[in-house]
Picture 1 (cartoon, rainbow, N blue to C red):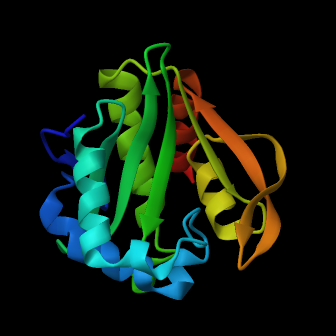
Picture 2 (picture 1 turned 135 degrees about the vertical axis):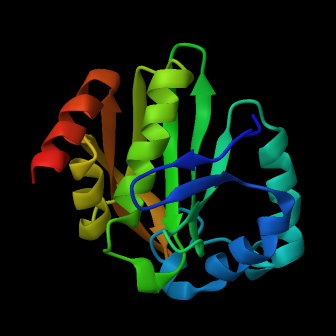
Length: 189
């Protein structure tokens, strides 16, 4: 599904992802420190090159079950990407996010981008549930997701490989009615 308009958050602007973003995505994916936390950390180097990223992006943009955005900071700098994947007719989807500009880590941009995208998912796409899985040792990410209303649902033992070793992942989800509570709590803190 192609995103048709930009979305404004408090600190970020989500702009529809386009093929022209392939070079930026390839640069972020090539950064070992960024890729460390991504499910694609085990991808072979040739899948991280711009041409491969561009081919994948063309497929993603044509997929009616995905909606993707580039995250821009308040100064207009592209800092990451976010999307809803596997959008299902029964009202569920999976969240995907990366902040590729490390200078913008731990500054609230990811949480604002997530809340902004969740509003689109729940209010306009009619979702009732958004899930995610994260590396169990990604404390910074898990704390961010919890601030956005996601709740821990379980552990996926030895779920993916990182540097050839199996690691556990945690499953988290937020329901439509929980987002309002998370936003209210975030506004009072």
